[in-house]
Length: 511
Image (cartoon, rainbow, N blue to C red):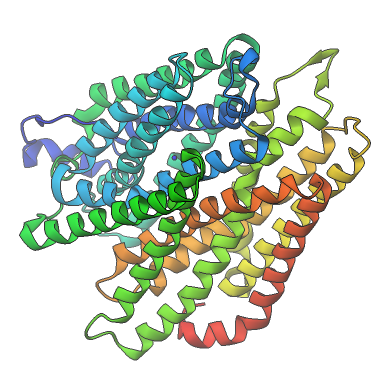
């Protein structure tokens, strides 16, 4: 973590709009509840499927799974996460230039539902990989579009009081992201129980039902959205279309060449696909940065800020490379090495995936108050990134301790995971919102959308790289593996902290 409908309703007259505008200062826009509900159910489907995916991939065929080796199951999980974020780039372009936000959300939801339905079919790998691809394509279309539609609710607000308008917008986005957390928290509890205790494919089917409910809500409440959500914000034009088709063709060529080369060396198809997507997540950001540095008329201040963003991008990619393993390798560790007995009964492994959203709900307000109270005294962007990587290193070090404690084959207390997820969420709250904020502030004129795409690409690269580093678990014990990851995060934190003065100079006034 999108509903399509082609025809819009008749345009609302200015007189009909006026009452809504007059009360804008005292109530939320009419479309907020619709978008909140759609996003909540979409995230329910996304995180519900994600919670049981790696467990299903690694489960023996006798238990209904695909029987992949743990490191390969974790690698597939990582590549899926990479595709979701990579496909947000063409998805955002289609929404901006062709479909408009509402139809992009709707069609994205349709494709996501279809993907979950394919996953729900008990046909083995023949349904799993096409289903994952469909969910990734649909999410790439929906994900950037629904946030744009939400912003459009407040763009339609003509209140002259800028401070009040900003406060309403911030409050609206806060409520919106609460919907994300609610859906992400509830999903593993439902799909995890159904998938692990009843049947994997029924769990995937529950995710499909969640997205289907979101589609119904979108269709029923689409009339509450502003007219700006019903059409594209610009036109593709022949030149823009050619550039996009060329970019997509180039990406497919990279994947095709990588698959061809790996096949020549006798690599299984799934391994070749993992290598191809990983290569793509490296090539695309390089191409993005190169095109931005070569842009005509780029001011020296913007060039310096772009240089600073290269290092921010790399630090974020390292963060996501390690953090994304919370849904894959740590889930497999919990299955095999954690005591999951509660009140005399064993609870599903996937329920641990609800910890992150729960901590987010509990801590989000505290962090918002903290930054407001600190004001100008709060840490700089570089310092927050260093603290985020440091916190991630501590969380992974806790997992290393859990791995060492289970080395004798016994099961460890779930408190290890409760502590590790808590520290990781604190670290994520230091780094992720800061990264989103600084991405918009460092963007050169005319490159706002491109540089925001780079933030998605940092997540994609981190997810794909995680599919490579998990192979080390075939050589190292799990405790050693997590200790090495912890050392990498701590070294990254030290490097960012040491470079913060130079980064501040390159940022040219952006804190």
